Image (cartoon, rainbow, N blue to C red):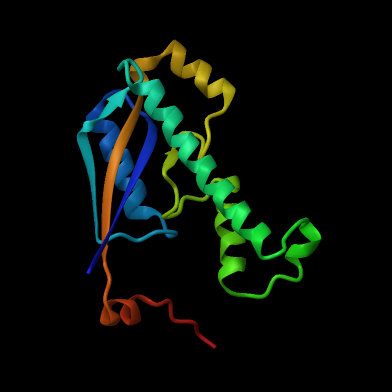
Length: 165
């Protein structure tokens, strides 16, 4: 079985080819997510000069916000109302939701990252960077990335991190 995922990545680069190189290098080097295959969909990638750039970027950020809102709603269902409640949260699925929410907020890339701003290591877009993009649209690119990982019992066992005692 294969799990497929898609990410929209904002990159600072002089052209689409250099942007693709930077994104592929990021995926090759990141320790947080390991995919078996990563490819840049150049046909669905664009520079900030493209008429669809702004709408696509806004949709990517909005998707991240939606994911975060869904996580927070799910935590409320299990009784989390304040930060104090997190101390009582049992380890398991709900604590992993908190972990995912924290990564969306702190800028760590993960499989839940619909949009990732490689320029600022963020899931959002700061006002200063938005201004910079407006001033130099040819230098910024949104890359559509498709990734997959093979999943099977043997694969899961062989890729688990081994801890030394």
